[in-house]
Amino acid sequence: MKEKEFIQDIKNILNSKYIGDDCAFLKDLGIVITQDSLVEDIHFSRQFATPYQLGYKSVMVNISDVCASGAKPEYLTISLSLPENITGEFVNEFYKGAKTAAQEVEIVGGDITGADKIYISVTAVGRTKGRNISSRANAKIGQKIIVSGMHGSSGAGLKELLSGKKEGKFITAHLMPEAQKDFSRMIAENIRENYAMMDTSDGLMDALSTIAKESKVCLSVDFDKIPHDKDLEKFADWHDLLFFGGEDYQLVATVPEENTQGTVIGEVKQGAGVEVCYKDKKVLYMPEDVERKLFNHFKEEK
Image (cartoon, rainbow, N blue to C red):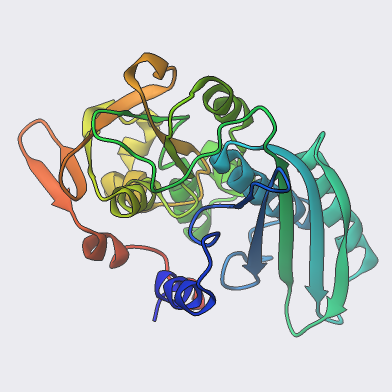
């Protein structure tokens, strides 16, 4: 069983209207809230990342979830479970990285316990006042699909790390991602109608496919319009890195045509799945096609 199947089972058992988006939108409290966990040897390796980089990325990926909702990131709590051989220097550097990533977002608490390996769990809270909050189920036929930033860079960075390379722009993109605060604010403060938005933590294709499935529409994308670093094309599998590499933490949104301030890569159509339009062909990806290529969070990295 994979992550999304577990989530669906949990949602069914709890009968919760809040489960399913990057954040739970608690309208009565005026906040969104999210929690994300990183596990050693599943999501990261100390062989590749410094304690500072771990602290930085742990915070940034949670801020990204708040940005995906359209809310303003405000508060964070951090829980660490650490093995006995972890030093005070590790904890100090971890929190320095976390503080750098947080910037004006305040870290207000957390927990530290013992464990057999490193477990990191971060909770982020965002303020919704003055923002139109998104949902993956809000894509409407006729809306434009827009994205922030470059895609595929983080996946290329991981590939380089695994091959023995120590530094470079792709590795930096993987270890030190940036949450798209300005892009999120631009959309949430200016778009009045319902819209869908999601971050690309599990890859661009996953975000497109999830929005299509939850909104019961087809997302049609022009491959040549997807922004990416041209050096990505040096990789033999660069198409897969662009769509399935994951951890770029860019944003994908479906918006009315008059609000297309991001990079337009396609439009929302009637139908199902994700249609990718190449120069010489069209390929339709259904949810089961996407699931087969996604990273499995329940399988250790070798």
